[in-house]
Length: 207
Image (cartoon, rainbow, N blue to C red; front, side, top):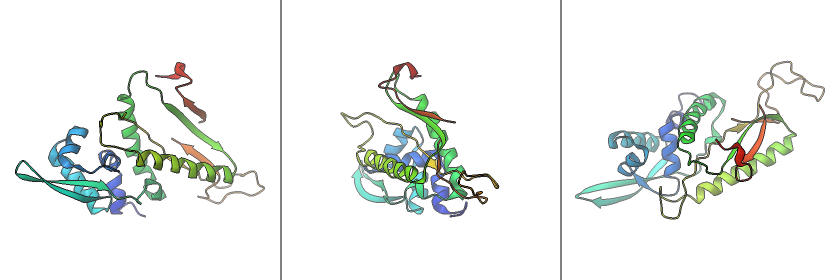
């Protein structure tokens, strides 16, 4: 995947990342998205067209409304962000960081949550098992998504980007060999190293 790939260009924008998440399970129109995102109807429509052209959302419903036609879109599953290759990692990270800052500012006062940051070295099998379990947890959360502000629901902000780090050229990996430039090892980074903090059990660390 290159930096000019339509899929990458569509995803590397904080608003479009939010749209894909919002319409993961529930189809929404440009009008509904404009209200949720606080942007104009025209801009919401433009973002939807970009996502549609990249194959990230699809039209699933057209309904009559006040003499007009409302087109509602839902995310196309099977296009996960984890498929992005190295060339686009920084662009995606910038869009995710923007959304993380925004969501942190909208956090419910005193609400429990989990905060973690890590740069550490583990055995390859530990990394593989963790990656699969984390992906499954996020898939479970996405699949449980309902319409924004649906009765009986709570809004959740979740951002994760976890990946192997490349060893610098000539670095001893501890196995008696030196990693070649760009060689990925069994280390992982999730946006230093602190253990995950479940703020249900550690309220003193809440912001």
